[in-house]
Each structure stands twice: as C-alpha cells, then as structure tokens.
Amino acid sequence: MNSTITEVDVSGAKESSSTAVSWGPIIAGALAASTLTIILMLVGSGLGLTMVSPWTGATASIATFAVSAAVWLVVVQWLSAGLGGYLTGRLRTKWVGVHDDEVYFRDTAHGFLAWALATLLVAGVLGSALSAAVGAGVQATSNVASAAAAGATSAAANAGGTADSNSLGYFVDALFRPADAGAVAPAGQNDAGSTAQASRILVVGAARGEVSADDKSYLAKLVASRTGLSQADAAKRVDTVLAGMEDAKNKAKAAADTARKASATFALVGALSMIVGAFIASVAATLGGKQRDDDEAHLVRG
Image (cartoon, rainbow, N blue to C red):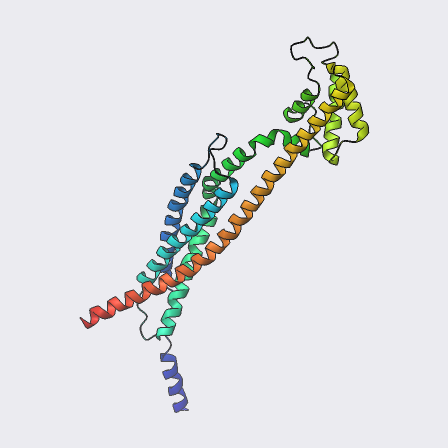
C-alpha cells in the first residue's frame, strides 16, 4: 500500500499547479490590437471620404469603394492582429518544465485568445461608433450614385406613393405641359381632377409593371384636352413619359443591385479578413513567445 501511495504522490508532483493561460498578456495584446484597429479604421474612413464627391463623375463607384474598404479591412486585421499577438507572446512568463510542442500550442492559443478578445472589444464596445465613422463614406457614395434616379424611383417602384409627391408630380407635369410653352395655359390646365386621375394611373401602372392600352388611350385624351396637342402627339407624349419612368426605375434597380453586390463582397471579404487575422495573431504570438524564451536563454548562458 505504501508503494502505491508513493507512486500517486510522485505522479501528482509532476502536474503544475499554475494555469496554462496567462490572462495578463492576453488582455494587454487585445488592448493594443483594439487601439490600433480604431486608429486604422479612422484613417480608412478619412481616406474613404476623399473618394466621395457630390459632383457627377468625380466620385468612385460603389463597387470600387466597397473593394477598397474590404482591402483596407484586411490590412487593418493584419497589422492589429500581428501587433496584439506578438505582444501577447513576448509578455507571457516562461513555462518551466513544459515540452516545446506544448509551448508552441500555448503560444498559439494565447494569440488566438488575444485576437478574439480584441474582436469582442471592438465589436461590442466600440461597434456603433466605428460603424458610424466607417459607414459614412459608404452611405455618401450610395447617395451620390443613386441621386440621378432617386427622384423617379419612389414613384415608379412604390405603388403607395401620394399623388403630390415630387417624383410622381414631375411625370404628371411632363404629361400636361402645354404644346407651346410661351402660350397662355388653357382654362382647364390646372384641373386637379385630371391631374389626380393621371397620377393614379401612373401609380397603378408602376405597381403592375405596365400601363394598360385603355389607360394609355385615356391618358392621351387627357393630355390632348389639357395641352392642345393632337391625339397622335398626345399619345406619343404619353409613351415618352412612360418610357422615362421605366428608365428611371431600371436605373434605380441597377443602383440597388450594385449596392447589394458591393455589400455582399464587403461582408465576405470582412469575414475572410477576420479568419486571416486570427491566424496572424496566433503565428505572431508563437514568434513572440519563441523570441522571448530565446532571449532569456541567451542571457542565462551569457
């Protein structure tokens, strides 16, 4: 029995009482990574806003802006994760009596934990502020890119729009412009009833995707009676206005689809950059830990 107790005691003495996780270096590395992330995010936001201009043709496209933002996000992950991981490895204490493979694993785990903590700090505590700062450039670019079609979009795409909205009103006004702009408007030019009917026809047509032949014919009669145009010319004007509405709707759809693709690209690249960041933090912690142990060993030998 004494022999058995002795073996158990010897076996237990081989197990270290200290934990394998050094939270101090992990927290320090995470704070350093978070701080660098904030600085680089603000720099990227400033650079992104320089790509946006209210002048037509002077701003970058949504796709270009999204790709640039995604690339910058990768750079941010590389730099911040590398710094945080390296500091985590260099600042931890030396593990005595631990196999080299175990040291390698612990350093890798410490780097990953530092990256994870930094990610949680940035996303949880500072997420709203960073989203507002970084998203300002994306929002501005989106507004500039869709400005040309935005007015017509709400009337063409939204069947519930009101008859006196600016976008719909533009197309109604285009229908009822007098044939001679310099002439005095006919007595019925400002007939609210005709305007309301035309507005409802355009709204329902936008909801259905097309204006029926009967509605087109009726619109042509209203336009002819209000503008002094012949029936044939009034019908041509109706077709021109409907084509303009359709073109505006298609431009709006194209702008929305471009924004959707750009957002998807940004999200996917962002997720990939985070995975790369986790890997870099783990490797950097391993390198930092190895350099720390090598420097200490060199001092001991010296």
